[in-house]
Amino acid sequence: MVTEQITQGAQTSTSQAAQAGQTAQPVGVPFDEPITDWRHRHLLDVDTLSKDEILRILSTASAMAEVLDRSVARTPALRGVTIFNLFYEASTRTRSSFELAGKILGADVINVSGSGSSVEKGESLVETLNTLSAVGADAVVMRHHASGAPWLASRTIGGHVVNAGDGQHAHPTQALLDAYIMLQEFGDISGRKVVIVGDILHSRVARSNLWSLTTLGAEVTLVAPRPLLPSAMVRGALEPEHPLGLPSVRVESDLDEAVVDADVVMGLRIQNERLRGKLLPSSAEYARRYQLTSDRIAKASPEAIVMHPGPMNEGVEIAVDVAHGPQSRIEAQVSAGLAVRMAVLFLLIRGGA
Ligand code: CP
Image (cartoon, rainbow, N blue to C red):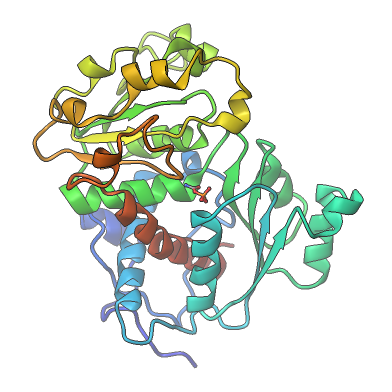
């Protein structure tokens, strides 16, 4: 019987997280008791999470961060569980932090890539998933170039599915770790002004962040040249009067105006592998109008923080001094990814029906 607790205290439920307000403070997480009030089996995006559920994940992540501070950062919370990291696309941060998260929680973690697996011999996604099921996968953490691939996986295998980034659709654990950093910084992000600038068109990070940030009450401004905006946004799909409208989201083309008084300025990577030389006349022209420079950050709130999901094209979407300057939280984002992914695996696998 595992008796360890991450922190002392009673099992924390969604309603307790809500009572604690908008916070990422650690909560008691007994490892040896079933979690009876977590309803999600999979994490495909953050749009299915309520505000209380997002806060529950983030407060659990804070407790996981306390585990990481121990001299021996290990717990047996997922002992006996087998997790497959199935990555069809390149990744450094997400893949390594999911692998480490599973190992710290005591799970067996197996990495499978598109290259080097039977995918190279023509095996289909469904057959690969069935194979992982047959060898005992309790959970599959999946990155895929096709939007919707984790959704297909969730309907193919019996275990849990975690979306680690699918096509241009969603990157839920990135959005959760971004919210974790903002809550750490500001305590409450309701009413905070978050500017997201860059290749919105191809960005699963921007899409997931739109859901989580608006659910937490932030005011979001998206900034991009028109070719790097989804056509629906160019046509005003986010305007309040539009049927799909999100009242707390604006679309701007002028970064110098958008950053004024911002609390968070988040740059996005120019996704050259998806642009294939199209849509942008030149990196230099893009940098002139949309690069996060110290002059532009100076127009934001004096307490503003700079974020970027990485990997960065330094000197294109973000200046080197801003990327590594005092307002940057980019390294902290990477570190937070480990605790947040531990929390996601723990809640889904121990609690998800
Ligand atoms: N932010 C992010 O998903 O980075 P990786 O591609 O390195 O995982």
